[in-house]
Image 1 (cartoon, rainbow, N blue to C red):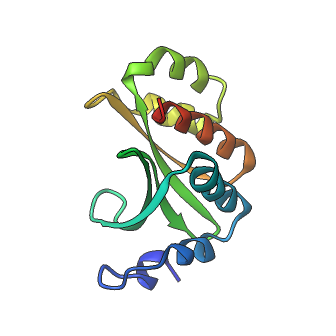
Image 2: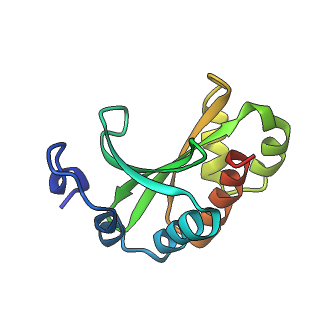
Length: 138
């Protein structure tokens, strides 16, 4: 069953429900890194944007580090690449998974950042995502 069919706007999931639905080692690693290592707080929100439904935002010091969109057996992540660190991020992105490179090339900077949306379905792309998240902490 699809995430949005399981949890409608009126039926908010619990944080644990996200992990049960995604059920991957990559999710467990990301959640641990963000909450235990970085100290970010997870928050569930319902959106009607281009990726509608319940998502999980990870915030630290009022900054959104990333947003996770649950899918069965994987998840999408949205990370904003800060224009302030454009040269450093561009040097890093060319070494990353092709999907991140495509996401980076797809859009121009808007309001100080590029919105990178991509699937996390393996250890390598997860490591790349965690590197990008480090720029959100600066």
